[in-house]
Image (tube, rainbow, N blue to C red; front, side, top):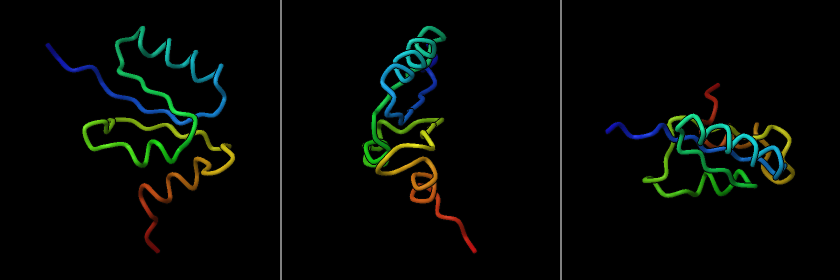
Amino acid sequence: MLARPRLRMANDDQRLASSVRWLLCDERYDARITPAGEAVLQAPAEQSAELIQPDPFMPRLDGWGFLEKRAPMRR
């Protein structure tokens, strides 16, 4: 049996996050949603994901800051 693709989403809009999770789980994704980008960054290696979708408008660590911490841009 194939493992379900893992998706991690950081979004502080609870209603939107619940709807997205419901749709993705229905499509056989292992979807986990957190209200803060920091939680995705601090997740253990066994909870890594094939796709991470951060909300670009979160209050403490927005999606752009998340991407910068996850994969710093080289100049």
